Length: 116
Image 1 (tube, rainbow, N blue to C red):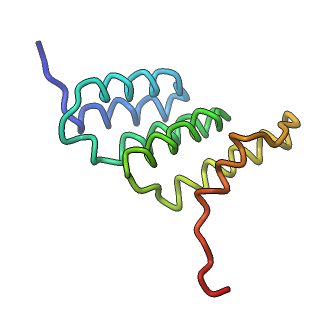
Image 2 (cartoon, helix red, strand yellow):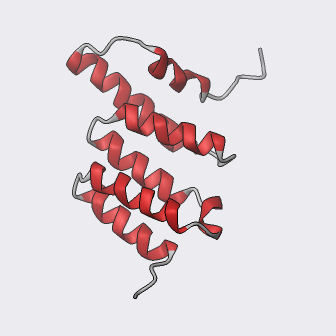
């Protein structure tokens, strides 16, 4: 069979993001996780998948990805954090989403201001 590398998965994930196919992106990321290997230190598949989730208003799934990244000692970019926070805030305004334990998780990723 044909072995796909991280670049191929990245291209597929980007296509899912562009087409608003967040569930497909999550499935591809899960498949990539099963493959294993050096990709585990690569944050790009997580960032693309989180972006796809955020664009679709699936902030809870994006938070789950951030939790997975934290457990795997992968860095979360400020851009990714901003997208997740914006997606959550949009859901609050649109749907009246209430603050729960998962939404408070977003705040735990916010950078700490060391000047104070």
